[in-house]
Length: 393
Image 1 (cartoon, one colour):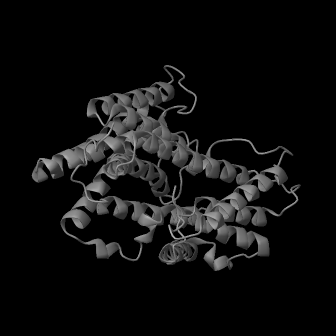
Image 2 (cartoon, rainbow, N blue to C red):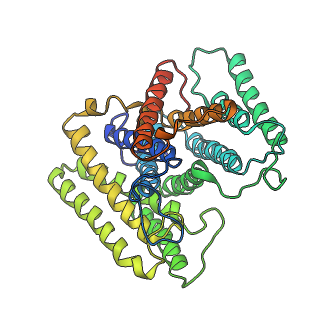
Image 3 (cartoon, rainbow, N blue to C red):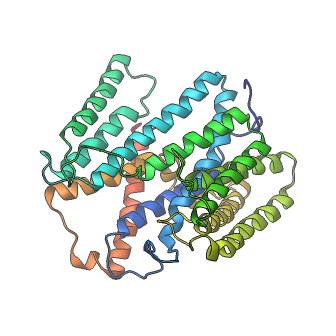
């Protein structure tokens, strides 16, 4: 594997992917903040575990997984274009996955933080987030190596100390109750990126992998065969990520052949077909549910993601409307930074006992508060990016 697989003529970045990533991260921050607001319209919020339903908030995470898949071919091929060896690319896949899994592991245990712990929950949350920044900051090439590794080492020491001091609600130490948002992304990325790497970008192998993940998820939720496997469990995360990987390759090949008219038609058909198949599968595969990660939910969200990506291709890559997304662009280029900033915000609120006024915790007041928080976080993320304080994994 010594050369670029598909994107030999690719630009450094596909701006449409950055645009859809920025929009998705903005919405993720918004719905996360909105989760604490009462009296909002039911269709905006997450559906409950027992419901056969899907709210707007339930579409955000699978869209982000789809975007992870979109980025895999372009990111890995770009490394090969730069002359990185296969071992170097493989190491980057493993190290990126490891970083996301570690952060997800700490976030999951934050959910179970006990009052018997020595440190307050807010302080523990702030310290683990600061440690994430120290370890995975995109340090400039000009920084002194001794200083860089001192900061990274300091970050790891803080994380180890936080793990040592941790006490859960049941008096337990840290453990993987589940892997959290970042952890699920990390495991899913690891599996799908390795498949892409060893398959050398062959579309046929990627489609087979997609069908296997889909089959595992369908068999499990159709209750025909329990398929909770190690790492991939019911295959839901990999199902979504591999869909994005295939669409990314498909897009590259269509453009390379100059089939622009066909591109619009087939992406639209693929998106609508995925949504339709999702609704058809609904009665037979445990309904629609994000929390249960059912096939109908995944297929509907894949379809939505394809259509949104198609719209962004048209607006940003073809019509050059990048400026329409200028305000939120940092959420697409400093995505992990923007995702982690709310942990500093919420940790500080817990530490000082801050509460929003009741008017901002209920109904439309809370709705607009969450939008304001999302935009402020992205603006701060952009400021930190300009100051070279962006995380990179």
